[in-house]
Length: 187
Ligand code: ZN
Image (cartoon, rainbow, N blue to C red; front, side, top):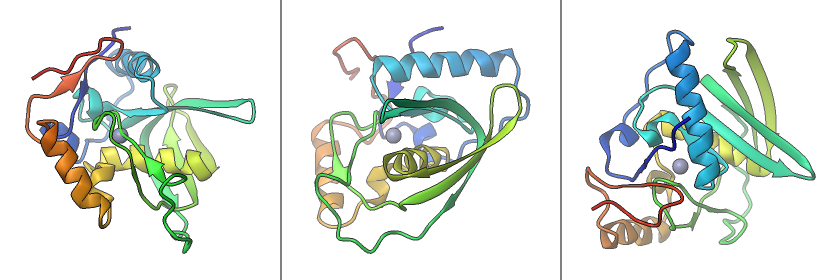
């Protein structure tokens, strides 16, 4: 396992649709091991392969609630979404972040319920029905595989504030990344 650099918004692979995994081989297993290590070190609750520079449809997730840990890998996932809730956007409860836009959090409405269907590392298909925060994680990570960052989905005034934050950090162009556990940002 190798800790990998996490790419920051502006790197092209983050903004392109990732390709289907054709075969679950040793390379894919190594990639997934690196993804778990990097997610845990960040720390984060999810990480997509695109975030460490690999344009394949894989994400990992690790989420604890009520003494239960839900942890796994989703290969070639599909996601079925309920409608967006019609509740008002809540600045705190709906605040979302992304390891590819480190340190910036903005509220975003998501569907309350999703069904994730994907393949695990053994090639076995599984399904998880998720609500609340886990549903949000799945939507966020699935979006990564479509080349969509949560910044792309923000609404006024958050969209403008996020744009400003990205600019002020010098991101939004090729060449920025960070290594979890090391407090530095590459120029
Ligand atoms: Zn993200």
